Length: 349
Image 1: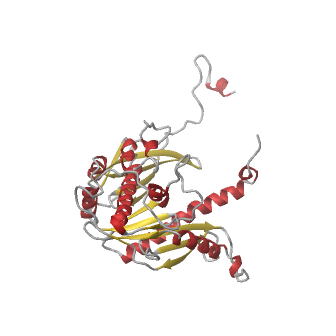
Image 2: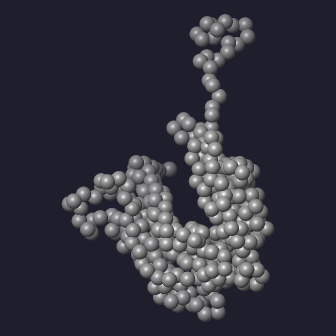
């Protein structure tokens, strides 16, 4: 056995992982804020692009995958029940470069990341060419003025037609495997309602993501095809291998159900809880996506956002919550009790 390159250079491997994870976090935060500012009357659904594209462009041989095709990292859908949705393709990157005054343009890591991000984002075309707006972001974690997020925008309409509220053609139908015809390996024709199919896939992947946040387990499988990894969620899970839906907490008067994890940070035990408002969770487990969206939109701005005294940090979404708190530890005595028949001094020796 030999150490991998990451094992030989652990610091470099850690920095790469940090740049990747924090680049996603800061990039998505900026992208969502920009879209939310433009569409303040809508709810945002941010989903990984891979399960969306696997629904129609998965390779048929071996495990379903997209190969080396350039593609966006995420999609953001700004939606409102009964209205056309707006779709955005997003790429996110991060780096640790300290760019000074003498750093040339071609040597700037962020600029190179934005260029590669543009290739990935614009390789996705829906209906008409250049119709989907793109957001490309690169985060400098060691910028001289603190963390800096560079952003580029490609304009476009990105409009998805509204779906029927119920019945055939709505998101309440179970997804089926389909490989739509396309040209040049990227373009999805707008004819025959195929753009609407993309919107259905977005709704299903968004619902699956919300259930995963709450430890939905087998309920997630209903929303995904085999190519999207639906079989992974058909097996039984337990706390040692996956998130389990077995926790609930109240924030204000609102009851949230979901899953929790306990981990240690520098010797401090931390609990994280993630979940959904209880009624919204029940709608998703009953496969009522359209009603879920109507209720989530109706509750927008009405749910209490009080974290109370038990939680140190709470992030509220549209019907979802992520909360973190320090787990109190029992007091530790200075010395263990002496065994029977021996004095405390002898035990200490």
